[in-house]
Image 1: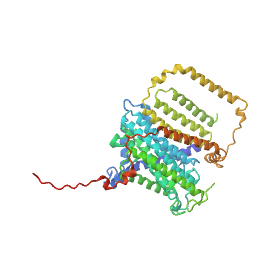
Image 2: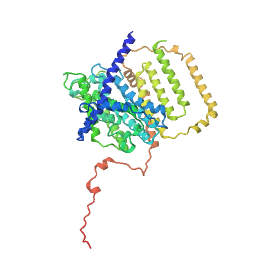
Image 3: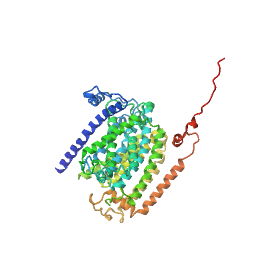
Image 4: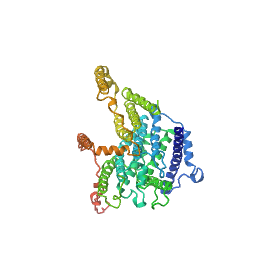
Amino acid sequence: MDALILTVMTLLKIVAVLVPLILCVAYLTLAERKVIGSMQVRVGPNRVGFKGLGQPFADVFKLMFKEVIVPTNASRFLFLTAPILSLAPAVAAWAVIPFADGWAISDVNAGLLYVLAMTSIGVYGVIIAGWASNSKYAFLGAMRSAAQIVAYEIAMGFALIGVLMMAGSLNLGDIVRAQAGGFFNWYLFPLLPLAVVYFISGVAETNRAPFDVAEGESEIVAGFHVDYSGMAFALFFLAEYANMIMIAALTALLFLGGWMSPIDGVGDGIHWFLIKTASMLFLFLWLRATFPRYRYDQIMRLGWKVFIPVTIVWIAVVGFAIYFEIGPWFSVVRGA
Amino acid sequence: MTFELFVFYLFAAIMVFAASRVISVRNPVHAAMYLVLTFFTCAAIWLLLEAEFLAITLVLVYVGAVMVLFLFVVMMLDINVEPLREGFVKYLPVGILVGLIMLVEMVFLITQRYFKAEQFPAPERASAEAMSNTESLGRLLYSDFLFQFEIAAIILLVAIVAAIALTMRRRPETKYQTPSEQISVKKSDRLRVVDMPAEKRN
């Protein structure tokens, strides 16, 4: 009986996270078009519903009723599993995200490690899609994506090591609690280089502009998903946006104090987490509207020759500062 | 059969199946994908053993990075499977012999007096609150097994240096981009203003 109640409760929690997440994805696509539209002095979608608010649903219905075409020489099984392989990790990673104090589906001790593992296997969807389509453009996209993810994953992992050193825990809830005490105590300040590297690597990892060489439409049409249509294509889209929200939420949790209010003890709660995540998402859209796409060799150079050295140096600095308890950030006594 | 045991057998069955498909399937990319599945189920079994750090690291390192590079290489190569299969019958006896020796060794080891399972009592279950898996692993690595840990680190360092030394070669025909030079470029480096007097038309 207890097991049954636990199962039902867990399922309810999953639904309570998934449904808002999918709605967020839907409206993020609209927000993206609106924001970029206004940055380019256009109106953006404004036909469906009040001021275009029905646009995401129109898009979903259109994609749902389109035929999913499998190319003749494609590897059918892998072609159809690829979208699922890319969506499943993007959604599974949300299991350990604490939305407010204690509000997580599963409060795992190795939470950060789990998130890192889940975000790193999302690339399989892209690689398999590119290979299974049996098309040159798709394949080139997959190759670029694989090389890019491996390069930026290392920088991302190193950036997180600094956070672990400061917080002394892998539990996402504990990491946020370690940043208690207002705006000044957020890890954004002592770990500024790591935070910047983390966010940019996150943008690269989600294949977003200016790092979207995997789908660079000017060179390789649409990269790994040229041959996808209908719902299969929609799943890739869903995964990309869910990953974007994930990176934004993680930046908020790790460097911006999660659900903590900027002023110590004044109204902590989920609203702060949502505000911080939303502002990080805005940054994603802003980046896309501002920068031209990186060239492939420049992406590799940035990942290997700039980000990794920066993170290694800053980890050494943090270790030094923690050992000698240099104030104001590193003199705090941590849980041993 | 408890639920835990059922889960174990389920994952073990999937793992054995996937591992055998890695060597029996024809397409190298499919084989690599089966290897990914093997790693995944292995991680699940480790989770059952409450070794969450090892399990997640297995997924992170092997599935997330090593296998991606594997796939990268396998997809780029146009592997012709036929010549690979030619030697199958020829090498089969040797293969069977090696397999048998390994099997005998393993059976010998676990049925021996000193290595029997009974010789090693199951470790006591530490409560999850007392100390996390990661913490206790870190503590052991940096105290009791520091020497071994550092030896492993040195070997890895040597391997990295060797890998770079083996693959690095200067290729004069490759065009490099040096951003620092590009940024420090001055107008006088690129632009030459030529003064030409106007000529009279004939």
